Length: 174
Ligand code: ACO
Image (cartoon, rainbow, N blue to C red; front, side, top):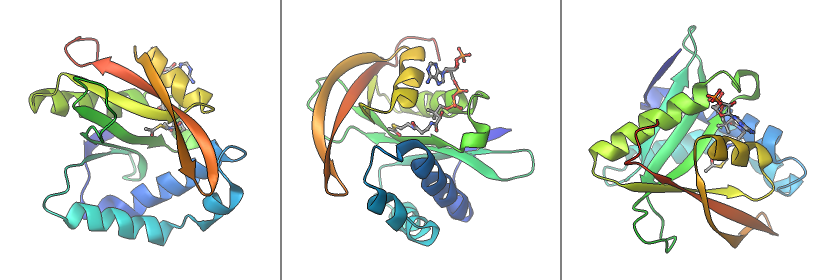
């Protein structure tokens, strides 16, 4: 098992993890039509556009199995205007294929991202997660996230609530 920065060749794997894990996690939460419209090709294209843009501020990591399969990914970047002072960085997305969950990959992806963000001078990071996503919330709480607030978002024609968790990157626990 290996965590490393993603390259263009990883993007079909990233797309598969995203689509499969979104469907497994958000069925019954996010509108069905939205989940059905997700596609491997569409997601691979979107991530390729990002990675090929020199000014894209994201940092994309993958978790690779021993056989070289991408089984998880995480994307970090600058805070997207959340309004919480001091939170300069954000965990944009973290997904591990259902069959690979609970084996430490989420924590390892989180740790790698935090290490880079610290080195880049960030002191605090936040993450937005759907309020109903108790699995994701349990993970962030286990990693010491502090509940900061909530907001309503529109997704696939539905209105959903998200909550934010904050992490002090000065703490050496990751
Ligand atoms: N409740 C309590 N503790 C949890 C939970 C939970 N739901 N999930 C994980 N943990 C704990 C583990 O027990 C472990 O604790 P330990 O290291 O002290 O033993 C620690 O958190 C790390 O667990 P991992 O095995 O590394 O977690 P995993 O590899 O399953 O990754 C993740 C976590 C990314 C949430 C994964 O389960 C997943 O992809 N879930 C579905 C998608 C999802 O919810 N993604 C986040 C959406 S929000 C966003 O992307 C910004």
